[in-house]
Each structure stands twice: as structure tokens, then as C-alpha cells.
Length: 482
Image 1 (cartoon, helix red, strand yellow):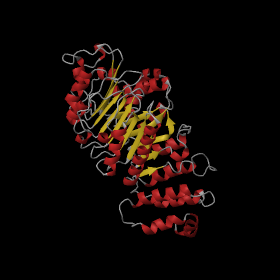
Image 2 (cartoon, rainbow, N blue to C red):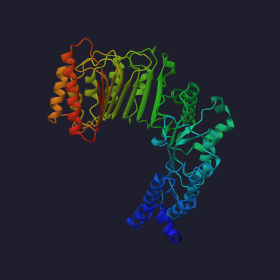
Image 3 (cartoon, rainbow, N blue to C red):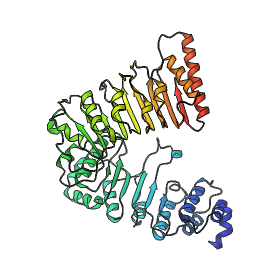
Image 4 (cartoon, rainbow, N blue to C red):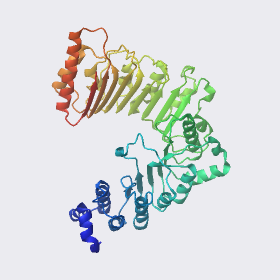
């Protein structure tokens, strides 16, 4: 590196400055320096960028056995005049020969236009470079996609891998009936603790593939703690009913159909579950809880997150809160597919769930009671309320903002009276509410048949509230649409 000193200093002036500033005996010396070098390299114009060979030499000097994490995201497309992904592949080769990294990321960059980005399959050379990382424990890639065969080979050759987060190409679900593939699947993925994946589209065949792969993992990979696409509801009922081995899975998603014969009678093979997602069919027969198989869903001793989709029985809702409320940190209630929401008594949430940190209620029409206060939620940090557009409910905005540690709030399709808006404005100006807000987004429904003077007064007060919030919380993200 000394022989190239003047060239290095000329082509990347900041690199040598970084070297001089960092304490070479400090912990994470190589980690910090590599990250700074890659960031500097990615920002240089073509005219100032060093040659491929010089950049390779610098990176080689900076990588030491102390390097534990590596992020290829910024340098995947550097040096486009070279063979495709050449610098990224060379970086992987250097890392595999000189360090024992535990964590590798290759992510889509926001500047690359993630919405329109066409994800290519990872090429053979890059996959070979990753397989050379013998100490790798965590792999997170959405910049490229893999096939099932790609992943089986990768996991078979990296025995240390525990966390795998990837994009995967959907294939016909019939492939899972191949006994040879199933045996390879179990042998290769058997040590994984995390296998999160999403396909390349949201078409029906992709969703079907994801659900089938999720069920396959639940059934055959008992060491998994997290599996599948968290944005897609995948019904795990079938593998749960067939489960023979003790599972380490920490989340379950189950669809409740009309027939009780399709409800799992016992979950004793899943003692570690802390997140439970339940989705009711529209024709579900709500039998009395006592004596029903639904009782098995009330016996997860470690549960702290409860997600209920399309539940329309207030007694069932109350029973879930009564059993789990004191231990819940997150409660989600959601209505989809034109399912009419049940009348919601917010008092039940206040009464049974004092330790909630997140409340997420979507597709609700009305909150039918008023004998409660958000100020009682001392641990609440995030509140999301999304009403249907036909709601007539007037929210108590000042009270919703009164949770003492609230940091994030999203309110959609809300109606607020003139008096309540004035009260909220006054309490915000006095510092009585909203003191810790970092993110706030409101979408206010327009009121019909109001005279111009009232409309102007409301608009003026909304303007004042936005200005006060931005003044008192200058670093917060405030967005109110009315």
C-alpha cells in the first residue's frame, strides 16, 4: 500500500484521512474503516473514482480478521465497464480469504428506485463467493433472487448459517412432492433459526408458493424460530395439526374456518410462541368459548403479540383480552375483504392490556364507548387507527395524544369536532400532550354541509396545530391532510 500512497491519496483523498483519524488499536477498527471506504468509493464521480485495481488493493489492505460484517449494497454496480458485478465478486473473494465475517447484506438502495427495480437472479460467481464465507451466520439479500435449488446448495455448504432473509422465485408447488428434494431441503435448512422469504410478485401463484413453503418449513424444520413472509398471511393450521417434533417457532398464523374439525386441538408442540395471528372466515361459527376447540388458542404462556383479522364476536374478543391482556405488548385488530367490523369497546383494551406498546386498529367503523383515557397507557409508543370512510365517529383527538410516551401516531379517515380541535390545539400549545411525538400522520375526512365560516375556522385551527407541532417537535415528521 505504501508504494501506491500518492495515487491512493490523489484518487480517494478521504481514505488516508480516515486512516489517520482512527485509533488502530480500537475495537472494530477494520469494520469502521471498510465501511467508510465503501461509502466514499460509492459517492465518487467517474472522473475521481480510482481504477478497479487500486480500489481492490485498498480494500485488501483494510480487510483484517477482525471484520465481522460486510454490506455489499453500495458497491454491487461499481465499475460497470468491467464484467457484471465484478467488484462485488472480488470483494467477496477478499473477505472470504482474509476475514471471518458473520453477517452479509446486499440490499436494494432507495436511490436505485426500489419500486421500479427489476430483481435479477444472483449469478453463479456471486453465489460461489458467498459460499466461500465459512463463518457466515446471517445473510440478508433482496437485491437478487434465488431459486430453491440455489438456497439448498448455499445452506449445505455454509454449515454456520442461522439467519436467511431472501427473495425467492416462485415455482410450481408440485416440486415439494419430490422426496429427494424434500430430503435435501431438511438436511440443508435444518440448522436455520430464521428463514424469511418473499417472492417476486403478489400474484396468486406466488402467494400459493409462499404459503406452501412456509408450511413445509413448519412441518420439517423444528429449529426455526421465524419463517416466511411477515407481510403475507400464511395459514399454518395443517402443519400444526400434523406436528410430531417439539418446535422452536415463535410465531403462528392460523385461519379459523367454519368447521371446528379444522381447528388445532393442542399446541403443546409450540411452547415458544410469542406472536399469534388469527384470521376468521366470514362464515365462521362462533360457538361458546367454553368447551370449544378455540380454548387451545388461549394457552400460549409466552404470548406478547396478538393479531386478530376479521373477528366479529365481541365475546371472543373480550376472552382473548381477558386471558392475554396483561402480558401483551402489541395488539392488532384488522378487517379486510369487506368484512363489517364489530362494535369496538375501547374500554376493554384499557382495562385488560395496561402494558401495550403498540396498538394497531384497521378497518374499524366506530368506537362505541367513551369511558376510557389513553393517558392510562404509560408504555404506549405507537398508535395506528384506520377508520372506514363511512365512519360517523368523532374522535377525542386530545385524549388520543395524551399517552405520556407516545412517539408515533397514524390516524386515517378521522372526524374531529371544532371544539375538540380547539382543545387539542390549546393542550399542545401548553405542552400537556404530544411532547414526545416523532412521527404523526393524520388524514381528516371532509365534513359535508358546513358553512364557509366554520370550514375556514377549522382550516385555520388545523394550520395552527401543524405549526405548533413543528415548532415544539422540530425534528418530528408531521403530516396532516384535511
